[in-house]
Image 1 (cartoon, rainbow, N blue to C red):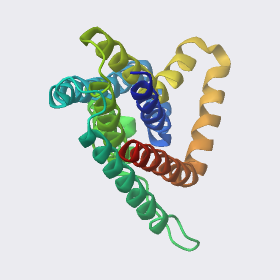
Image 2: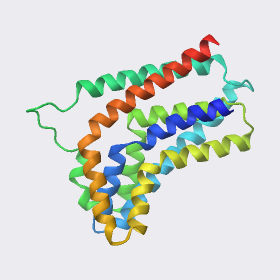
Image 3: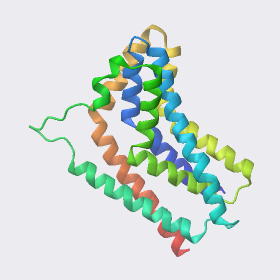
Length: 223
C-alpha cells in the first residue's frame, strides 16, 4: 500500500502545481464578489477531483480483484507516462515565440462578470477539461484502487488526493481570507509569477512526471 500511496502523491502534487488554477483563483478573488467567487471556484475544482476519485477508485479496486498492483496497472502507468510525454511535446511545440501574440483564454476575458455558480463551473472545467489534470487524477485514483488497502484505507487515501490536488486553489483562498492588508499584494505577486513562468513550469512538470510514471511502470513490469 505504501508504494501505491507514493505513486498517488506524485500525481496529486502534479495536479496541485497548476499555474492556471492559481491565476484563476486570484483573478476571481479580485472581482466584486471576490470571496464568494474564489470559494466557489475552489469548491468546483475540489468537487470535480473528488468525483474522479469516487468513480475510479472503486472501479480499479474491483478490477484488481484483491490483487496488489496487478499487471494491468503497470501497463496503465506506462500509458500515463507516454501520454504525459506527448503532452509535454505538444506544450513545447505550442510554447510562446518571439513575435507571436497569444490572446488570453476566453474565460479570462469575462472573469469580471463571474458569479459563484459560473466560478464553480469554471473550477470543475479547469480540472476535468485539462488533459494533464484529468490524466493525473485518474492515475492517482488507479494507484489507490490497486494498492490492496481496505475500503477505509482507500477512502483516506482518496481524501488525501483531493486535499493535495486542491492546494493550488485553497492556498490563495486561505491567503485572501487570513492574510490581512498584505494579501492582495502577495496574491498579485503569485499571479504575476505564475503567468510569467506558466510554460516553463508546465514543460518541466510534464517531462518530470512522464519520467516518474514511465520509470515506475518499467520497474513494476520487470520485477
